[in-house]
Image 1: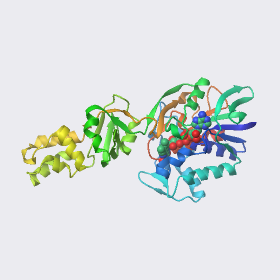
Image 2: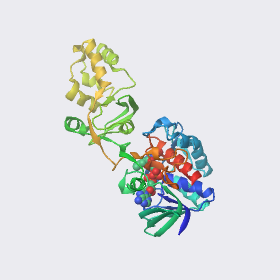
Image 3: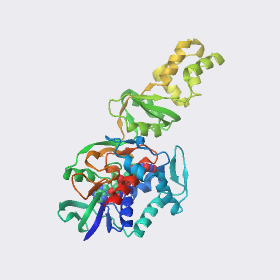
Image 4: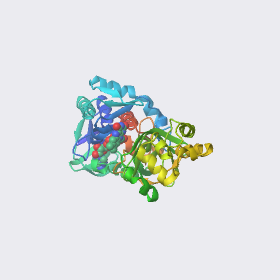
Amino acid sequence: MKVDVLVIGAGAAGLMCAITAGQRGRQVLVIDHANKPGKKILMSGGGRCNFTNLGVTPAQYLSANPHFAKSALARYTPADFIALVEKHRIAYHEKELGQLFCDESSKLIVRVLLDECAAAGVRIETSCAVSQVRKSEEGFSVTTAKGVLHADALVVASGGLSIPSMGASGFGYELARQFGHNVLATRAGLVPLTLSGKHQEHYQDLAGVALPVAEARVGKRSFRAGLLFTHRGISGPSILQISSYWQPGDDLRIDLSPERELGQWLADQRAARPAAELRTVLGEQLPKRLAQRLCEQWLGSKPMRQYRDHELHALGAQLHDWPLVASGTEGYRTAEVTLGGVDTDGLSSSTMQSKRVPGLYFIGEVVDVTGWLGGYNFQWAWASGRAAGEAV
Ligand code: FDA
């Protein structure tokens, strides 16, 4: 069988590319080894799909080349995807920080994409694993579980390594290498961090304790959002965000009270209630169990009247700069995204086409472009899919 465009991967990027190419009159076939399309979309955003973010700019993406994503993101914006969602009368809302979610279910986003595919004449084959890809003068020959397919253009939209149980595979990276592309080292991103040794011992039974706002810092990068203690370490939006910037050995610091300066606050508390113990006073600013544990393991605790002014300011400074030693991440099993991937140096930033192999394209998460938490990764999938779909 011969088509104009063969897309490998019926996820966010692959479906958007297929729709765009189909609307241009190209004959498009999308294949996926999973048993249904859009599995990650279905599980995204806690089942409500955080499908874009109103504040998207290239600055919210990590890549060895921070300029690469600019062109595609500028040509397919959050407003474009919102228009598509509104065309299909899907109700949505802004949760916080520009994050847009479906009111009902992420199934509706998959529905939108499949309806658009059908309208554009796109065919989708699921449970279709690929065993071999070859390029000849006539185009690409792809050997699959359902026979050999021929195509003028081949779009690799097979995603990253996160959540292998959902069909994630290293296929796209292997294919890139096969055609001479450089693949940058991959690692889990937007992922909980683990603690080990003393830190794990001291804090593991705080699992479930949450801070509504903390600031996680690595070097000059910081994120202010919720923090959650888990059985093996720490999670919550501030930690997921910083995890993409953290590497083993990096110094991680947590500001446990970014919205209230604690040194002066503690001095005020001493004046108001000199007999109260530090751990009791801190328990009014931080979750009680955390305050107690920090006092037991780190700060000590005595009645407030026994602290001198400079000691309270020093305690405050410690709580704004807690050095928590992370030992690793929870890995691809729970990561939302994969950092690294197909080196953008080998791709055109306007079309996503390989500079080495005409007709070969890479889009979405398989490419070395990774967004922050909050709808940025889907926006990259839509934008890069659109860019390739306009060019194939
Ligand atoms: P995606 O992974 O979506 O699709 C790749 C497709 O290729 C899959 O269907 C897979 O089965 C197929 N495939 C893989 N190997 C293959 C092979 N060898 N042969 C054939 N097919 C193959 N982002 C966001 O912006 N907002 C959110 O709310 C969330 N929420 C979220 C929750 C969870 C739990 C996860 C794991 C991730 C998110 N994300 C997110 C991230 C987002 O899901 C991700 O960035 C996009 O799905 C990437 O889109 P792609 O199309 O590139 O890959």
